[in-house]
Figure: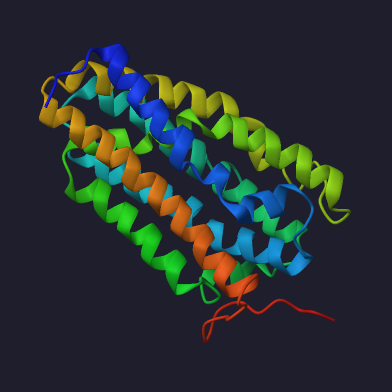
Length: 243
């Protein structure tokens, strides 16, 4: 294995995003292109809630085993971003405004009773990955944020133009995410470029990002299978109202 320069490592990471990021998934093309029913949009938002709600758990586990105070200080901003400083604040609360705006019962969403099994398995695999892998791999797995500002822009423009049941207030979660994602990905990218000092470390970093892309992709696979084709909703999972 060849030791990559920091710039070569960054180029390889960005190539993974260009080929594997879930922006390329057919379900996202449907969602952003106005081809989803309201029930399909509801199913996406409900299932994605579990991912959003689990982000602070994986970040807290990362902080708990980090012995570098400067990294802990930087990373804890992510907890505030998602949990907020008080009830009703933060990204998770804004995501619940999205599910509220789509007509989903908040208690039902937060109970997780309607989750697809594929969503649960994918999200829990990500939480376990961050908890169990090296700190370098855990930080590298967050680098999908390098690519999120583009998908957020597409999502807001597409959903606002195509769905009369979506409003700017409904999508308020996405207002703050692009600058947060850029800040977080800048830090994580700099960290892995400085700390992946061997070919083995660099391969682990690349594999971590591939894993995370797979998590996000598999969540959309589960949605497409249950709510698009063949349309087989697992027992107990959310069933859209077709009336």
